[in-house]
Length: 263
Image 1 (cartoon, rainbow, N blue to C red):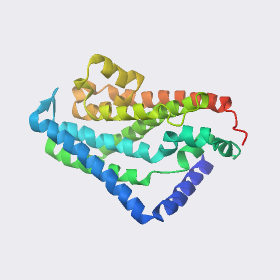
Image 2 (image 1 turned 90 degrees about the horizontal axis):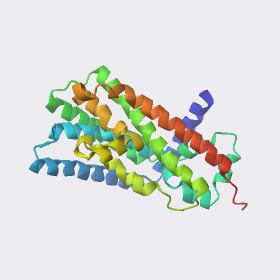
Image 3 (image 1 turned 45 degrees about the vertical axis):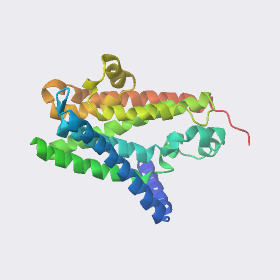
Image 4 (image 1 turned 135 degrees about the vertical axis):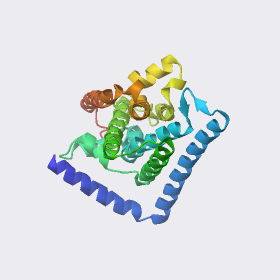
């Protein structure tokens, strides 16, 4: 464990040096990320400009949910860049051979060879939204609440990684440059709104099949509507651990199924 943590720090430092060598490009990426997030917040404002409440949720409650959703999303986006391009870069082009000959866990290398550093700007914006909305709601964010939000952020990131790791593994059996990740990635936005607004099938899908709701909605609802969602506090880490273990098992099966390009 100590060796992997040390290597993770080295990976992050070295990639940061490379990424920040082109400061103009990095700055443009940060600005683009911030603008996209601002447009997302503007969309929430436009909805509530016409509808004061949405299935029992008011503007600041949904904005609080939106702000929290940025935390696990930003952490996931920072780590997932290689998962998104895994089929094209590592399988089709044969670069996974290089990963396998190194004396280091293959998944560790895939996750930490690159970082999307500009995604961290969303985490800053998310914290700002949480603090601002908490004040409007009269909700005190004390040490316990921040610790809970930090733990829920990690669990949410793990859930995202587990789902997309399983989708990435499809490339071991079906060589495809695009893969199946893009359409599912678009479903992430569903978790930024209360699951109560969706029909029962979609709510079940986002809770138990593709559990994006446990990454964002249920942790937030457990704080804001404790009387209805208190028991979900204990399910969030259980869902995260279960799906991640399943993803690791599928990954190990995929690695064993992989055959070299021979080039």
